[in-house]
Length: 287
Image (cartoon, rainbow, N blue to C red; front, side, top):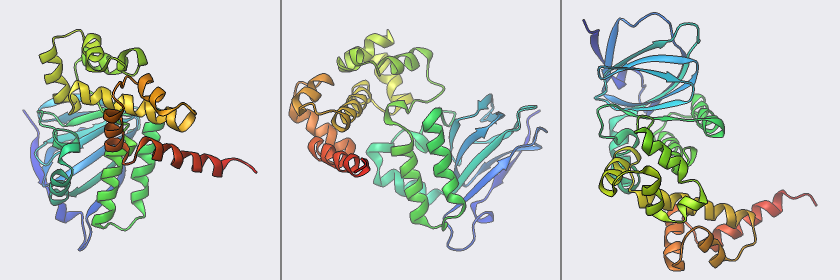
């Protein structure tokens, strides 16, 4: 027999003028008495331990570093796995905020994060410096003013900075797609663009494109281009290679196309990016 269900309301968490609520919580090991859905959106990060999570009728195990983008329609319950001392960081915010972000940044977020269209919410696994950035970003909310500008800035930062664009992969994606994403970080693969990605996937073009859009929110070309541009940014910041050589090393034969993709991803030209990072590097060097 399933658990009883309850709907949690954002109004019970927020005072007048507040736009979000932050919680850092130790989870009990005892099974919950009920499942709940809510009228708000919820970002949940497993800071430590292991969690037994039941969501939309599916039982799953979440470990340290799992980040879950819960939607109002998701019904779930959670508890700490025995002996792991699980702790979560949790941010809840109004549905109107999510609607505003979805409209304003449709090209960036459609079908991803809180707007994932699958049965289960989008779930990512963060490790190393990426996990550290996410924890630090969430902990800054403890003492900040709980206004609308603050939560929008936080959410955009998580989706565009904390989460490296090349690693935004739904943790439930097929094993072959996860393997292709890992392979795509190899210059020998990403220089060949979408063709290299499809070859690493070992599946037909139509199937690869459909699954990539479902789990990455991007086509294979868009996904690989993000990796190529990130690699170009690293070369621009850390080497003195001339721009055509940088573009060629990243698999771009058309310099104009490279310029356009770089500006879209970093908001500046390749030369502007290099100059900015040289100023920072020069300022950090001892006199």
